[in-house]
Length: 263
Ligand SMILES: [Zn+2]
Image (cartoon, protein in one colour):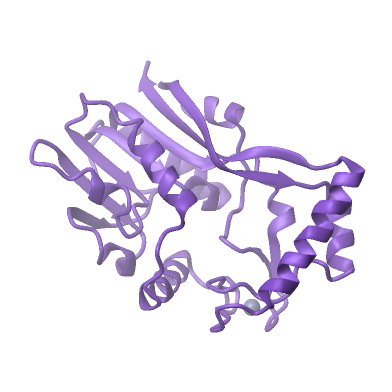
């Protein structure tokens, strides 16, 4: 039996809140960069897939109507403005209901049919602007984990699709990109044969990362670190060295963010 997306998100947020996790420095930079894309002429703002309100809680002001929608009730507990429990592919809002619709770090998680419906819904309820942020050109196959309990292979953050700037340019019919930027952290990507070799030699791919949850059986590790930090560091140095010698790694910024304007 696999976990429904809502069950999965509730479980992930419960672990996150229980352990009082804090966002990393690079996540904080992404939040600030995202907020900097918001224009002054937006008086109604919806954050779709708002999670625990990291973005929408920072936009709340007297002269703006703000709303956060998420699939997880557990996440919404931390949202300090109007909150709606819902699914992105069936939004309970009228056409062009919000000046701005923000959808950050959500699209990469959506299954095929939900993804297509979600894009249509975003376009339907946005009156002036849309902000989208997604991982940049992510090598999904490189980041798969294997569940030690049921053997299921899955992405640690449950990403199921990869994006480029071109993907974003072609996402909407009635909106075009007005502004875009690439954001840190810098990600190094290695070709598949380097990754496979490193995994086979057990240089990488050890243990089950903390906070990862198997989407099939719900398994997660309660230990903070399954591999000694020094060993991890040594392993990554070996991969780095080999890739340097082979000159095969690609460096790129990890995230793309785009501000769309209505045509
Ligand atoms: Zn499993």
